[in-house]
Length: 225
Image (tube, rainbow, N blue to C red; front, top):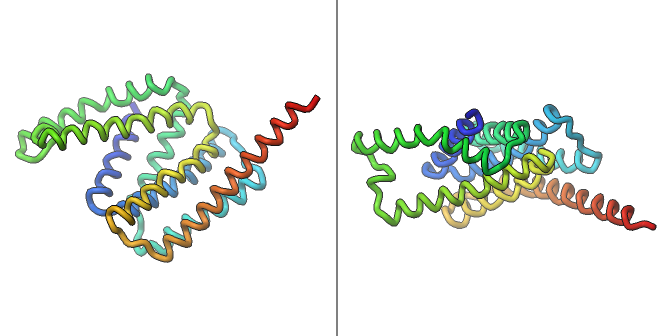
């Protein structure tokens, strides 16, 4: 139940951010989220970083801190999104449920609340899924599928992969959100964004490079006669 509530609140705030033209701030939230995941992994699961990974982590956190300080106002949307999704990932790992079963339980438990919203939205004279044109309703249904699949795969990864690794790979999604905000919705991309982006991706490249090097060394060691 707790995971369903947390991820639903996270969705709600993200939808609000998109509809209010604050995609870049939402992107900042998902830039902060991997750092939350790494810290939670260290505190709750005893995960450790090696020296190279600490350098990567430091570079990423420098970029996020720089962007947060120079953002212009307190990014409450970004902070809220980062913390809620970080806690969601931690709970998924702690519960260790089958991904599809867990997702089914989460959506089933929050479905009554969504149904109440639809009913009262119509009765109150406002717009809702029921009153939208068929084309819009179809897009909303497809959006649900697009949202569900990443959560399903995330549930699998949260159980099998350390949170620190999940954290760094999560930088791919906010980078895509950043590009969408800039090139599709034409939000401003400042020098501050650029500097933070460079620091974050330097950290990601270092982290992924360290994983590749250690995997190669492990394979060579295993093949030695």
